[in-house]
Image (cartoon, rainbow, N blue to C red; front, side, top):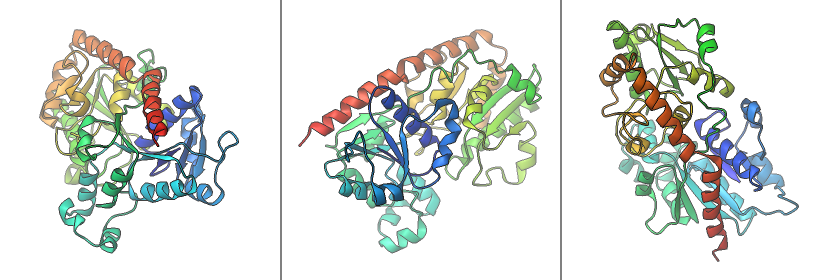
Length: 387
């Protein structure tokens, strides 16, 4: 059972959906637990859920049955956020013998620190009541999430850098996302999408999929600024942007920076592959800071699988990708560097083709269903065999 901190509208849910479906296809019985809004899974209608879906209350009140047995072998907490932690502990009480695995995909401490506007070490010293008043339970609680990791039977991490937060002797597994390589592939023709959006053939198009929040706001702003700089230099450029904004990341320059941006808001996930196919370059902005060092932005694997040229920061997966062969690795990830890249790559067809081919090959090798499921099942079984 995978336990999500939100409904199916988040980037984390994409990972869980694909992984649960992949496990199900190989004969494992899976379910996903969310707090509320089970119908939100309908956005995956082109890839129907092969797993059971429950909300927290119905599991705790009524229980579940797998194959005629009231048993859960593995509870996979996605991630150590407070509402997930509390639910998983209750679930383990209800199903004795189940193993808890905690998945890490972010530097939880900087996420909490940024939200609270208070240094993490200072938050650690606060009484529980003060923490609860400052931080919603959809985020990790200082002190509590560390206890959860210590008590867990195992940990999965999306980058090895996240082992900085894992107890030294804890069993761990590197878990990259499963990508549907048919859904994201180079054969998708984005010309119809460009036509529908009124984008001319001479425009160089970028696409950014994802919401903006307090932590990533500055780096997404740099993408808007890069597009403005490119146009000022005579390189006609348009940014396709999806997702919600939870902060004002453009400020007083809002209207100026949006001149060459098509903001589409939250879109059905079935439309995402077509939007990526409409782009000439897929950019993940940012630098190797305390946030980016530890995460693997969910867009990058999909970018690579799409067979389009990709640019990524010199952090996390960017340290593994071959520069100018599988992706362009951004050293600063700021607006000037991105604008320079736009102006240099737009007419460099050999480089575009090399990046597209190399990125797709990397995705096929590293994000395939068979590889990821096989390795994860071995990890699960190792935990289940322990006394």
